[in-house]
Length: 275
Image (cartoon, rainbow, N blue to C red; front, side, top):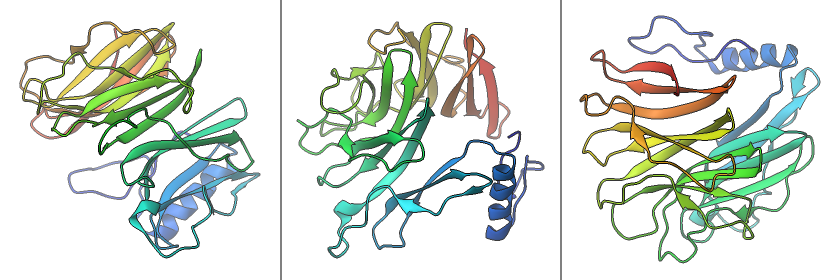
């Protein structure tokens, strides 16, 4: 819709849409809905005690009544009811939602899918770390690819500080095994926070990486199906600049990469195009 929404922050002088109250934020969303942009809104909500995911969708010129993705459980609050960090994708009348979930006493990636405008189906576990003693998965990302659904996440399935970024082509228990996106497997030098986009017949992936004892953004290219990747490389390798939080999006036949950078001495957002 041509504008974003944010609150004033020290050191920032402009933004697409400043708000200073909840009422102004709600009004901004209403104005977007009146332009008939396609909006699906999803958030973490504690109104029923547990931290659960709620969703509202555009219905004409306004957002529909909010509803939980899963009905709140009747039993008293339990940490296993918590849901966090939602990711959503919509294409061709279908919705995908993925999130971090604690229902099995491990942090796992779960998701649900359904037709746009209809209730989501039963949740399914999407990561394949079920053999781990105590997995700690986070940062889910979900998208429709040209050859099917793609799910990425930060994965920790070993009892040492070695987070990995993994991608799985498919949905649920019947999907092929996930693949590691990074070429490093050094203890205490993790990779996390994956992002991906598809353009020009390839799948471009990026993530946060600490293998060189500094905060890097590393990228790799692979097949659209998410099963085969080339060697990864750092953005601005060995220049002493910290880079954080990659975000990728298709821009024509190329992929745009945005991330935070300390190259200027302060954190700034940098936008570039993948080669």
